[in-house]
Each structure stands twice: as C-alpha cells, then as structure tokens.
Length: 367
Image (tube, rainbow, N blue to C red; front, side):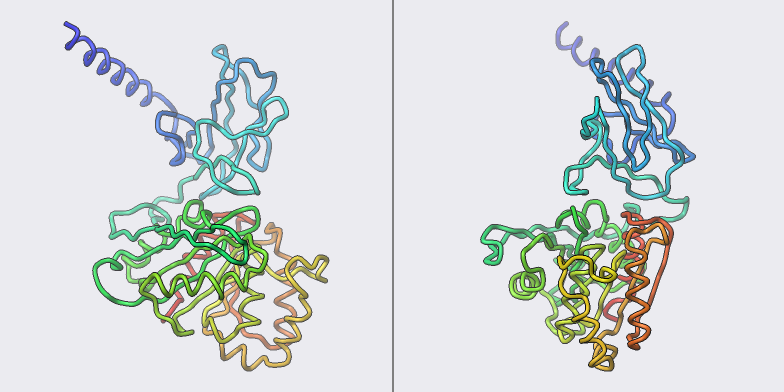
C-alpha cells in the first residue's frame, strides 16, 4: 500500500499544480526561479508580481517607477505594472523601507549590487534575442592572477559553435560591461551567446570569440593589454593581428574603450561605444584627461581615420543618461574630422539598447 500511495499522492499534487498553473494569467518570466509562478508577463507586456510577507506593513515594487503592492488575505503582496518595453529590466522590492531582492527571481549583479531581473518578450517574429534551434557556442570561464590587482580575476569567453570542431583561429571581440556591473553582465543580462549563435547561424556574423573582462580595475588599459589579451592569445585559438581584434563597451566600458583605442590605435581595428561618451567639460577625472584625447585626435586625425575600420557609436535616445555627453563628443569629432557611424534607438540607458547595439555591431566585424 505504501509503495502505491506515495507515487499516487505525488501525481495528484503534480496534476493539481498543473491545473492551477494553466489558470494563471500570462506566462512565467524567463528568470522566475524553478518552482515559482511569479513574476509573470501578460500578453500586453505588463508584469505581475507576488511576494509573501505577512508581517510587512508596506511593500513596493521598484522598477525605475515605483508601484504600491496590495496585501491579500493570504499575506501575499501583489501588483501589476504598466506595459513594459521588450528586453531585460532590473527591479527590486522595498519592504518596510528596505530594498531587497525578489525571492522568486534570479538575481544579477547590476547597479553595484545584486538585483532581481525580468525579461519582457520581443515582438512576434523577432528571434534575435531568443534561444533558438541553431548550433550553440559556449560561455567559458577562465581564472587568472592579476598583478595589477594583486588578486585573482576571471574572464568569461564566448566560443562559437565550430570552435571544438576544427583547428581554425578566430578573430576576437573584447566586450566590456558598464559601471556597477562586472564580467558576468554581457553573458547573463546581455545574452551574448544567444545573439551571436543566432547571427552566425543566419550567416549575418562571422564566427568569433568574445572576451568579457572585469573592468573594475585600477588601470583598465594595462589590465587589458598586459594581462587579458596575452592570456587569451596563449589559451585560445585566436588570430593575433590588429585586423582581427575589436574592442567595445557600454557606458563606463565605452569610456574605457575610447581611452584605450585612442592611446593604442595600432592594436584594434574595430571600435564600439554603446551609451557612452567622454564627460562634457570633464567634471571629474575618473576616466582621464578628456582634452588629452581630443588633442591626440586633432594632431593625427588621418592616422585614426585609417586605423579604425569601424568606429561605431550607439545611443539609447534622448532619455539615455549619457546622451548629451555623447552628442557633445560627436560635435568635437565633427570639428576635428573624425569619421564614425552613429546609431540611435529608443530605450535609454538599459540592456535592451545594449543588446541591440551588440547585435548590430557584431554584424560589421572582421569583414
């Protein structure tokens, strides 16, 4: 009897749970943890949240905009948002004034802390950022000891689907995160492997290796050139000439990219700057003397124009917090005569903009 009872009880529970699931509105977020039915996303792209906190006096959802959550008879706090734009959004809960992560969601390092995240589906037919039935590459992790930091560091490395199937060498994109994030950002929030797998499968991008380094370092340029690149070139099958190297970054990573390529134009042929630009009037010196770089460009503009096969700059519209810095920088570029390509898309200073930027930039590389 016992042998029959336990499986029957489990089956009854499972069927009941399945029946309950089908009655809920919308679909689970792709970042909801295994057993949780929340957060959920409705067909009109509103997000539904529920958290059990029977002893709390107040709970808010902080999604950039704050939403008041209401408590039901079971001690669960609930709310539904306005319609949200497609792509990844950070969020947190504010419980009695304390910002905490949602126990029903995966967490991500962003905004200089661990944050919950939700992804809103893209339009039907837009599979650029969707896990698809195509050959898949890998995200690998490599640890190394940094003399600059006097401690252990790590890089995340995307290798294309063909990497373990041949002996070919591949070009490399060094891809940097923004401030308050780290080397995990592009592989997790950014969906780097999914974007590249889909592009390569359609023949819209060449197979390449992408290296994602922690940019939170005392000297980014030296950490990249003296430690990261030698490590990559001694560990992976990569092409080592300038025309097979690209450097790109978002926000803080964009400024690090600018500083590095202006000082070292003979190392990279492709440059990507996403949602970034040197600070106007350089109100702080955190990222170096801005005028120094403008002077270098002015003194040898032809060398820089010939050096970069792509100098690609993107911005998340006027709502992007880096918008005016970028526009002022481009104005200076125009006066000097620096050639660049500019792309703008709505979305502000957010991961949907940076995913779009990587998608478009990757198609231009190494061709």
